[in-house]
Amino acid sequence: MLPDMFRLIVDTQLPPSLAEFFRRRGVDATHVVDYPSGALTQDDEIISIATNEKRIIVTKDIDFFDHFMLKNYPPAVLLLQLGNIKNRDLFVFIDTHLNVIRELFTENIKQLVLINQHKIVIF
Image (cartoon, rainbow, N blue to C red):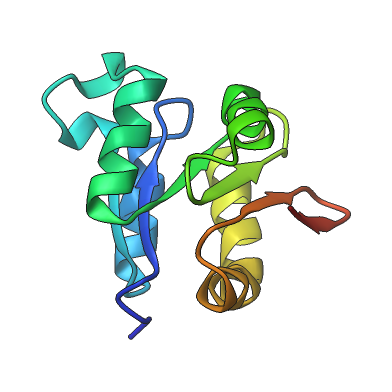
């Protein structure tokens, strides 16, 4: 079981099945479709949910990167830069890197981690 501080909210640009994938691996994960505004949840509402529920935002949306760099907020973002890949390939990629991702956020919950197929960058 992963530490309680490793809680995720998956952004609308990623499939709801990613949240389920995380849950099957013992991660407390939700998807924006689990909230009242569903897939129409705006970025500022996602930031509010993540802040209030102490969740890391998992996203492909570069706007969260910009917001974090300009305002050092939201407190934690996992930015996936993997292009348009099949869900199966996304799950394999996440599964391969899950322990590293967890460790990075366990060490410092207030950060931005950018991950792509070649590198992991921590801000």
